[in-house]
Amino acid sequence: MNLIKPDDQATIVKYVDTNYVGIQSLNLSRCAIGYVVRGTKHIYYGDTRHSISHGEVFYLGLGNHYVEDMPDDGRPFEQIVLYYSPEQLQQILLNLNMGYSINIATSHSCDRCRRHNHISMVATPTLRNIFTHIQNYLHEDSQVHDAAADKLKMTELIYAVVAMEECCLRSKMLSNVDAAHGSFEQIIYNNIFNDISIEELASLSHRSLTSFKKEFKRHFVMSPHRWFIRQRLMRSRLLLISTSKSISEIGIECTFPNTSHFIKLFKKQYGFTPAIYRNRFSNYTLTEPDAARSGACGA
View 1 (cartoon, helix red, strand yellow):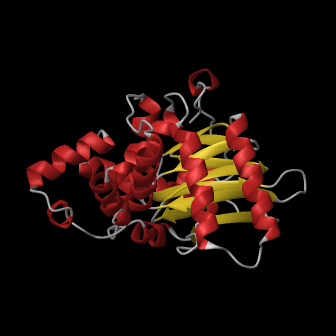
View 2 (spheres, helix red, strand yellow):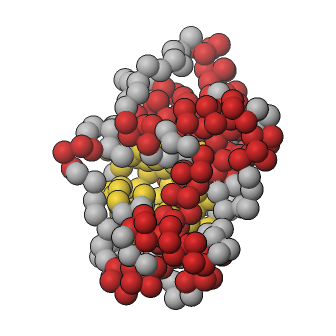
């Protein structure tokens, strides 16, 4: 499993992957809204795999994601992704609100929005047309990107999402308007695999320890210690089944410098030691979420 990062300068990018590269760790410093043109995209949360098919639009929040891009019957995997910072989104929404008096409030809330850092759904005709136009724009001007044109395309997409009825995609995007919210989450995601204390994280986010713990639980549902351990174990699990790195190397990479402690925590979480887990599940197909729970918004 490789760690990949998108181009921090590009706003609109078309990716064409001809070769299957397996599960990758994607670290986002900006939010992303994308569209699968061809193939299937998988998002992993522990033992659960969420599939995003061609013709679907997806949102990826700040931080780390485990993704797998699958080509389609010998044809390359293709996707178009637009990246934005919370500050850029805020400025675009401000301009739209001043010019068109659009409603940027949201009352939507559901378990998927709270628990997952991504959302997917079948693209509406409007969104599909926008991504088709973006694809043509990228094809016609593949060598040089015009910053003003990119911003217009981004504004058009954001307007289309905001104009939708209440749904997970709209709710997730509008949650980025609060710059402090985005900053808090970004600090957390940026430090998942750093050896840093809860007190230091509280200081980085300019909060008291009590305020930090309360804010953390509001965003991530569980305590900081439990959440960080879970995130690190999830990554160690994927490294076990997708790389040949040793148990101690994986433990250190996932911020478990004490190998015996790592093995103990892993066994408590997954029911097997890392070595047994690797032997039993190297060719294991992760489960899809119950289709009956996916709903119109997907997730």
